Image (cartoon, rainbow, N blue to C red; front, side, top):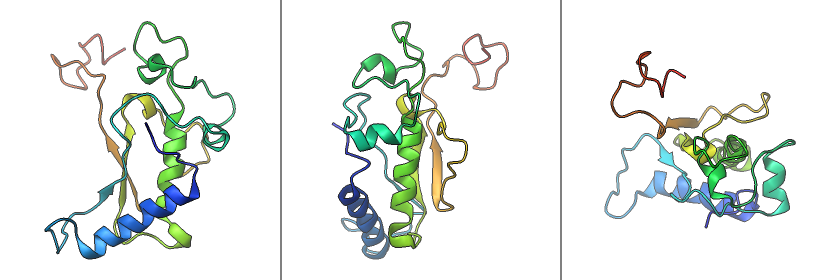
Length: 158
């Protein structure tokens, strides 16, 4: 189950925890030395929130079909809907967490923007990430036999 990313209480809670961990540390790490904090999702590709506000974050023309496992895996031959739009939803959430109350968080906020189910960039070309949002790239659809940029690889050069 994923969190409701449009819920202001969820956004505020995550932002408070980022600020608190930055100041106090976490479980025996009283003097934190990390450079950013990840606000990633649960590692489960389905069961995203279906509330009206979250669906609205996906934008018009969204191809995401609620809780269809094949939408989470764009390269699966059973996928009939193309790549999902959850990248936009997650970018909007990250921006909201990164600027609670209009003030930047003390450390950059990380997000996994490229992991299958929200691997596409935001659908809205005008949506820009806040300066303290860092995009983490976790390319999970690559071929393990070739370098990621090998033009001879049929999977990555297509």
